[in-house]
Image 1 (cartoon, rainbow, N blue to C red):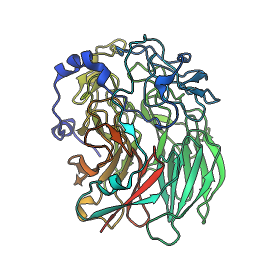
Image 2 (cartoon, one colour):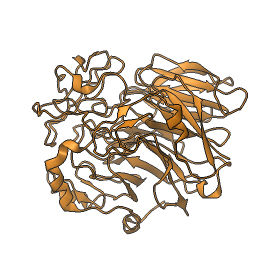
Image 3 (tube, rainbow, N blue to C red):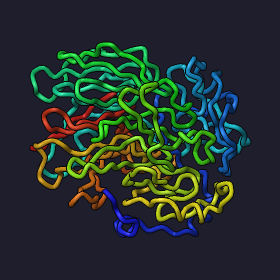
Image 4 (cartoon, rainbow, N blue to C red):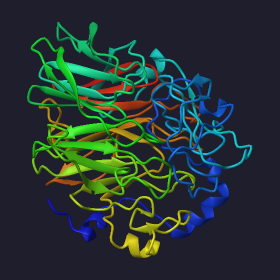
Length: 482
């Protein structure tokens, strides 16, 4: 599918002023870091000292250098483990781009910057446990209801569905869990671990009777047995780029029966030394050495959620914008992702607007580079942190939802006021997205000071209901049409 660049921008529902990008520098401390960190474990601000910078490039942010792949170390109250993932997570440390500690990974990182006295949690809403009254006050479109599908899942992240089976990944625990609803009442009464010992396992997808899983450096494949268990788990790719700021990988199998792997940027905004960062990679299902992977599309800072339109087969994904440019810049982007295209990061965003902070590319100006990029089709409020993305393929929702897309927005952490914390719906008409609208909202209180849920993974259940995770309270929710 080919969408003209003119038509792409005509569909954008967002007003941007170039001057706002420059003006926002004075208030950069109110921006947020729409990253994919799990949101559990020690807060990054508690780091005693940043880990070694590793291979990261010095960033262009006014807050200091950006972290690279840190060596394992003690930071954020957690002791570094074998993964050596310093700089991962959703919140920068006091020394640059750091993150939270999970699975024993060093959360430090950051190649410079001084202690500027900024409270990195100043505008982060308080994360509250599940609250029944708040749950009952969630807002949904007329004709839909919501229930708790399963609780007690720890860090419930991405969802996968294969036949009658529903799965959830748990990066912190290193597990994949099957959720069991034997009586079909819309509540999973049991669960079973089907894969373990996979630190930071995140992405999950299926092709025929095989399951594919991804963690920081690896893609694994196994056979799905009739009872839903996994047999013969084997690593088929073992050299994905180091994590850096965005370490959690997602993946999917396209209509071409090829494997697509999202690799986020190693930093907030920098010139990547490894061209495989900030990309979608494409590989054969055999992985390597039988298959040679390629960069399918680039300039995608962190497109965690992506999928193929059920009718057109076109690939769509929601990308997270950079931080420290103000409360409303840069916007999150819905992109029509095509082979060989460049989507702007780190030099430009929205309608090829030049990022005023980052240095230009070698041998060119930022404006010249941006003129060669592909702009987004729709824009969304900055810093809402899109995670899961799924086209509706069931048959129980009303007609307007057929072949539309659902997006889980995990929410901001230091924007004021806070934003996101919702599930959104994108109606598609004749293969084109029309808007981004609320579908499930109300996890964030009206004052923007507290939240009892951060949506992350999303999938269509075997019965046509919509499932999504809350990765802070370990809950899977289920939405059905009444």
